[in-house]
Structures are given as C-alpha cells and as structure tokens.
Length: 312
Image (cartoon, rainbow, N blue to C red):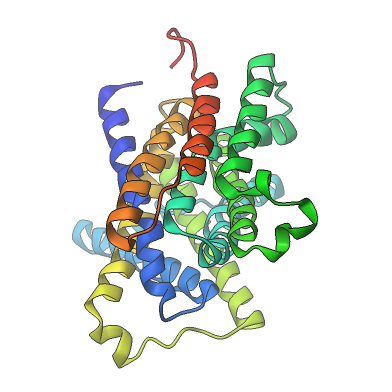
C-alpha cells in the first residue's frame, strides 16, 4: 500500500474513532434516528456546497456538476449504487445509533474491530469468495471476543434482550453489516464509474432513503435556538457530518480504487484503540478486564486476516 494512501486511511480512522463520542453529545437531546438524519443532512449539504462551489469557480456549470454523480444505464448498476448509499448512509447510522444509545462509546469503538471480519463474511455470502481455514479461525476468535466484550458469555441466552448493553452490542454488530457492505458494493462498481461519482450519487440516494424513513416512522429533529446556542452540539454535528462522513467516506472510496478492500479494512484496528481512549477521557466510561479480553480476541482475529507480505 502506498505510504500516502496509508496515512490518509489512518487519519480517516482517527476521525471516525471520535464519532461515537460526538454522537453521544447529540443523543443528549435527540433520538437516535434524528441524530442519524442530522449527521447525513449536514454531510449531504456540505458535499453539495463543494460541488456547486467548484462548478462556480471553474465556470463549467451543469457539465461540472454532472461529473460528481454517477448516471447508471443498467438496473444492476443502479441497484449496486443504491446498495452503497442505503447500506452506509441509511441502514448503518439508523441501526448503529440505536445500538450506541443503549451502550457506551467505548463498547462501540471496540466493536468496530469486528468490521474486517464482517467484511470477509459478506464477501463470502455475496461475492462467492470461499473462506480459508485461517479465516474461519478468525471468525471463531471474533465471536469469542464479542461474547466477552458484550457480556453474552456471562448471561443466559434467554436474558440477552433484557440487558440494554448486550442488546446495544448486538445492534451495533448488525450496523457493521451496513458499513462492510459499503466497500463491497462500491468495489463492484469500480471500473464503470469513478469513486467520486459513486460517492456523490450514493450519498444522495442514501440520505433520501433515510429522510423518507424518518418521515414515516418519526419526525424531523427540531434544530432551533437551543441547538444552535449549544457550541458542543454544533461542533459534534460538524465533526459527524462534513468531516466524519463527507470527507472521510469520499477519501475511503478513492483509496480502494488503489488498494484492495481487505488491505484498507485492516486500518480499522486504529479505531478501537483511539475510540476507547477518547470514550474514557471525554465521557469517563470504564474499561474492565473482561472488555480487555474481548478486545484482545477481536484484534487477534483481525491479525489472522492480515495479508501476507507480498499482497497489497
């Protein structure tokens, strides 16, 4: 992997590591689904601002604007494009924030380490890739680590749904399927569209789905004087949307044009470390020995998925 790409991916993961803490700040006032809407409303607005600004500066108008969006001619390509947007910008935030609402930012950060494992499993299911013995072993370790981290190992199965932290952890793992699908769907579109165009159309489609879902099931979040007067919440929203979504997700897609998905996914191990530190520091959340054992098993599973030296 080129050093410049690697450094960029590391920066993205450091930014994402703070997302659970920033989300917790907004969850003090808003419901999880409203926080998801706020995040991607600001991300979409920021992206469109970039597009229109560059179009105005370069004086190319409609031609320049259209260059930021994919216009699929085949139903299959549109389905993949919608899959990118729905998985990352609707399903994952909606489900993930409901999980985060029930558990801690530290737990969220540690569970992110499962994403490379989830990505491998989805690749097996949807891309027809066969798992090696090492990958099956990594999956088994990851499951054991999750059981320690979430508390599943110490609570009877019949009582799992009665424990908010366990339920929250299970929901967070479900949301990782959306995050992992983002890379898989986008990778299948590589070569037919530039990743910038994939991101532009996927973001709009995903936010549209999120907006309709919120209108059907709940109500739009009030963003009046109280929200605007609270500097912490304004900072949290700017971090989650323009920085933690628009710029970083776009860079991620540009990066996987140059490196394979598994190599990029391995940089996600930075999030558990940085995210746990931020959660303890900013929110005074605890870190028990049991969580440490669970996190160690998950990171060991990720280590088993590390490509050999000759791979990119």
